[in-house]
Length: 120
Image (cartoon, rainbow, N blue to C red; front, side, top):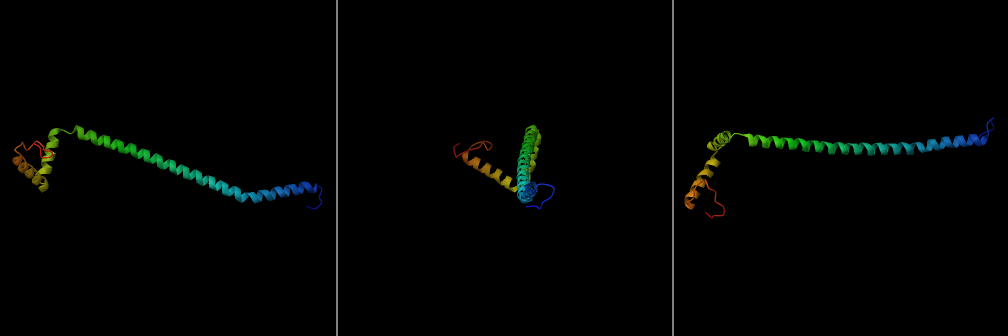
């Protein structure tokens, strides 16, 4: 009990105990706020990751659409010339072309007609 002053001692004890309770609760409340802030920042970082993935998927879609558009709008002559340039200096492509001609001569079919499963 507080010593006798002009204020009632019971009021002084109540105020003192309230102050002690506030001081005792402070660490628990601060830890609670810390945990809430940690949970909020973790949630925000997860939302940002999902948003970034969605934006990346949108960009990927746009790139694929652009590439397909370029492929479909190429001129046929340009495609043929590019293919001829690739095949003219490539020994593997030349070997494949000669093998195709040899196989076509055995099968007595047009070398430009593909054959699947040996049936001609």
